[in-house]
Image (cartoon, rainbow, N blue to C red; front, side, top):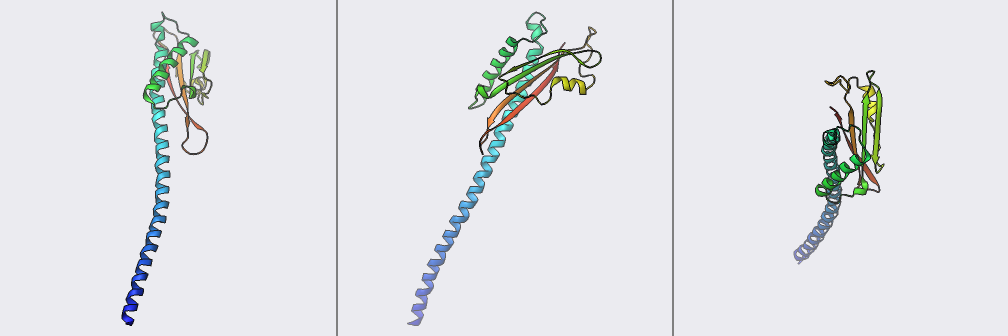
Length: 192
Protein backbone atom coordinates (compact mmCIF):
# COMPACT_ATOMS: atom_id res chain seq x y z
CA UNK A 1 0.00 0.00 0.00
CA UNK A 2 2.80 2.37 0.66
CA UNK A 3 4.03 1.66 -2.81
CA UNK A 4 0.77 2.86 -4.37
CA UNK A 5 0.77 6.09 -2.38
CA UNK A 6 4.26 6.80 -3.60
CA UNK A 7 3.18 6.24 -7.22
CA UNK A 8 0.25 8.62 -6.82
CA UNK A 9 2.46 11.32 -5.30
CA UNK A 10 5.03 10.82 -8.02
CA UNK A 11 2.46 11.18 -10.81
CA UNK A 12 1.07 14.36 -9.19
CA UNK A 13 4.54 15.84 -9.02
CA UNK A 14 5.14 14.90 -12.70
CA UNK A 15 1.99 16.76 -13.74
CA UNK A 16 2.97 19.75 -11.61
CA UNK A 17 6.45 19.75 -13.15
CA UNK A 18 5.08 19.65 -16.71
CA UNK A 19 2.74 22.55 -15.97
CA UNK A 20 5.65 24.57 -14.59
CA UNK A 21 7.72 23.76 -17.69
CA UNK A 22 4.87 24.85 -19.94
CA UNK A 23 4.64 28.16 -18.06
CA UNK A 24 8.38 28.74 -18.40
CA UNK A 25 8.19 27.98 -22.13
CA UNK A 26 5.39 30.51 -22.64
CA UNK A 27 7.34 33.25 -20.84
CA UNK A 28 10.53 32.48 -22.78
CA UNK A 29 8.62 32.40 -26.08
CA UNK A 30 6.97 35.77 -25.34
CA UNK A 31 10.33 37.39 -24.61
CA UNK A 32 11.98 35.90 -27.68
CA UNK A 33 9.04 36.76 -29.96
CA UNK A 34 9.09 40.38 -28.72
CA UNK A 35 12.81 40.70 -29.42
CA UNK A 36 12.40 39.17 -32.89
CA UNK A 37 9.49 41.49 -33.72
CA UNK A 38 11.55 44.54 -32.75
CA UNK A 39 14.47 43.26 -34.82
CA UNK A 40 12.27 42.65 -37.86
CA UNK A 41 10.60 46.07 -37.61
CA UNK A 42 13.98 47.79 -37.21
CA UNK A 43 15.35 45.98 -40.25
CA UNK A 44 12.24 46.85 -42.27
CA UNK A 45 12.65 50.53 -41.32
CA UNK A 46 16.27 50.55 -42.51
CA UNK A 47 15.41 48.71 -45.75
CA UNK A 48 12.59 51.13 -46.58
CA UNK A 49 14.85 54.15 -46.00
CA UNK A 50 17.68 52.62 -48.06
CA UNK A 51 15.20 51.95 -50.86
CA UNK A 52 14.09 55.59 -50.76
CA UNK A 53 17.72 56.76 -50.78
CA UNK A 54 18.48 54.65 -53.87
CA UNK A 55 15.37 55.96 -55.61
CA UNK A 56 16.28 59.57 -54.78
CA UNK A 57 19.85 58.97 -56.03
CA UNK A 58 18.61 57.74 -59.40
CA UNK A 59 16.02 60.49 -59.72
CA UNK A 60 18.47 63.26 -58.77
CA UNK A 61 20.82 62.02 -61.50
CA UNK A 62 17.97 62.03 -64.03
CA UNK A 63 16.78 65.47 -62.91
CA UNK A 64 20.20 67.10 -63.14
CA UNK A 65 20.63 65.71 -66.65
CA UNK A 66 17.17 66.94 -67.69
CA UNK A 67 17.94 70.43 -66.41
CA UNK A 68 21.41 70.43 -67.90
CA UNK A 69 20.15 69.43 -71.34
CA UNK A 70 17.15 71.75 -71.32
CA UNK A 71 19.08 74.31 -73.40
CA UNK A 72 18.78 71.75 -76.23
CA UNK A 73 15.03 71.74 -75.70
CA UNK A 74 14.50 75.46 -75.03
CA UNK A 75 16.45 77.13 -77.83
CA UNK A 76 19.78 77.50 -76.05
CA UNK A 77 18.47 79.06 -72.82
CA UNK A 78 21.13 78.33 -70.19
CA UNK A 79 19.48 79.93 -67.17
CA UNK A 80 17.26 77.65 -65.13
CA UNK A 81 13.87 79.16 -64.38
CA UNK A 82 11.42 78.31 -61.64
CA UNK A 83 9.12 76.92 -64.35
CA UNK A 84 11.86 74.51 -65.44
CA UNK A 85 12.28 73.26 -61.88
CA UNK A 86 8.51 73.00 -61.37
CA UNK A 87 8.23 70.88 -64.53
CA UNK A 88 10.99 68.53 -63.34
CA UNK A 89 9.43 68.38 -59.87
CA UNK A 90 6.07 67.31 -61.34
CA UNK A 91 7.82 64.58 -63.30
CA UNK A 92 9.67 63.40 -60.17
CA UNK A 93 6.50 63.40 -58.06
CA UNK A 94 4.73 61.31 -60.70
CA UNK A 95 7.61 58.83 -60.78
CA UNK A 96 7.81 58.59 -56.98
CA UNK A 97 4.02 58.18 -56.67
CA UNK A 98 4.14 55.29 -59.13
CA UNK A 99 7.09 53.50 -57.50
CA UNK A 100 6.84 54.19 -53.75
CA UNK A 101 3.76 53.02 -51.87
CA UNK A 102 2.39 55.68 -49.54
CA UNK A 103 4.44 58.50 -51.11
CA UNK A 104 3.40 61.92 -49.74
CA UNK A 105 4.37 64.78 -52.05
CA UNK A 106 4.10 67.26 -49.17
CA UNK A 107 7.17 65.55 -47.66
CA UNK A 108 9.18 65.91 -50.90
CA UNK A 109 11.47 68.85 -51.67
CA UNK A 110 13.88 69.77 -54.44
CA UNK A 111 16.78 72.20 -54.52
CA UNK A 112 18.51 73.16 -57.77
CA UNK A 113 21.77 75.09 -57.98
CA UNK A 114 23.63 76.31 -61.03
CA UNK A 115 26.98 78.07 -61.06
CA UNK A 116 29.13 79.60 -63.73
CA UNK A 117 32.76 79.49 -62.66
CA UNK A 118 35.38 82.12 -63.51
CA UNK A 119 39.07 81.41 -64.28
CA UNK A 120 40.05 81.70 -60.59
CA UNK A 121 37.72 78.80 -59.70
CA UNK A 122 35.24 81.13 -58.00
CA UNK A 123 31.51 81.21 -58.57
CA UNK A 124 31.00 84.07 -61.00
CA UNK A 125 27.23 83.83 -61.11
CA UNK A 126 24.65 81.37 -59.99
CA UNK A 127 21.12 80.67 -58.87
CA UNK A 128 19.54 78.53 -56.20
CA UNK A 129 15.95 77.43 -56.65
CA UNK A 130 14.24 75.61 -53.76
CA UNK A 131 10.74 74.18 -53.89
CA UNK A 132 9.06 73.17 -50.62
CA UNK A 133 12.04 74.62 -48.68
CA UNK A 134 12.35 71.42 -46.65
CA UNK A 135 15.59 70.52 -48.36
CA UNK A 136 18.62 71.65 -46.37
CA UNK A 137 21.59 71.25 -48.68
CA UNK A 138 24.58 70.04 -46.66
CA UNK A 139 27.08 70.41 -49.50
CA UNK A 140 26.39 73.51 -51.54
CA UNK A 141 27.63 73.80 -55.07
CA UNK A 142 29.66 76.94 -54.35
CA UNK A 143 31.51 75.06 -51.54
CA UNK A 144 32.25 72.16 -53.88
CA UNK A 145 33.58 74.51 -56.55
CA UNK A 146 35.86 76.23 -54.00
CA UNK A 147 37.17 72.93 -52.61
CA UNK A 148 37.63 70.97 -55.83
CA UNK A 149 39.91 72.76 -58.28
CA UNK A 150 39.05 72.14 -61.90
CA UNK A 151 35.49 71.02 -61.18
CA UNK A 152 34.29 73.18 -64.06
CA UNK A 153 36.55 72.45 -67.04
CA UNK A 154 37.10 74.72 -70.02
CA UNK A 155 34.89 73.72 -72.93
CA UNK A 156 35.77 73.56 -76.64
CA UNK A 157 34.40 77.08 -77.05
CA UNK A 158 37.01 78.37 -74.57
CA UNK A 159 34.69 79.13 -71.64
CA UNK A 160 34.08 77.32 -68.38
CA UNK A 161 31.21 74.86 -68.29
CA UNK A 162 28.26 75.57 -66.06
CA UNK A 163 27.91 73.28 -63.07
CA UNK A 164 24.50 72.04 -61.96
CA UNK A 165 23.48 70.36 -58.71
CA UNK A 166 20.09 68.84 -57.88
CA UNK A 167 19.32 67.83 -54.31
CA UNK A 168 16.20 65.82 -53.52
CA UNK A 169 14.88 65.41 -49.97
CA UNK A 170 12.12 63.33 -48.44
CA UNK A 171 10.87 63.31 -44.85
CA UNK A 172 10.33 59.61 -44.08
CA UNK A 173 8.24 58.58 -41.08
CA UNK A 174 10.05 56.50 -38.46
CA UNK A 175 8.67 53.13 -37.35
CA UNK A 176 9.94 53.72 -33.81
CA UNK A 177 9.35 56.92 -31.92
CA UNK A 178 7.85 60.11 -33.17
CA UNK A 179 9.13 62.29 -35.95
CA UNK A 180 10.73 61.81 -39.30
CA UNK A 181 14.13 61.22 -40.85
CA UNK A 182 15.31 63.40 -43.73
CA UNK A 183 16.64 61.33 -46.62
CA UNK A 184 18.54 63.34 -49.21
CA UNK A 185 20.54 62.67 -52.35
CA UNK A 186 22.32 64.99 -54.73
CA UNK A 187 23.88 64.78 -58.17
CA UNK A 188 26.24 67.07 -60.09
CA UNK A 189 26.53 67.59 -63.79
CA UNK A 190 28.46 69.83 -66.15
CA UNK A 191 26.83 71.86 -68.88
CA UNK A 192 28.05 71.95 -72.45
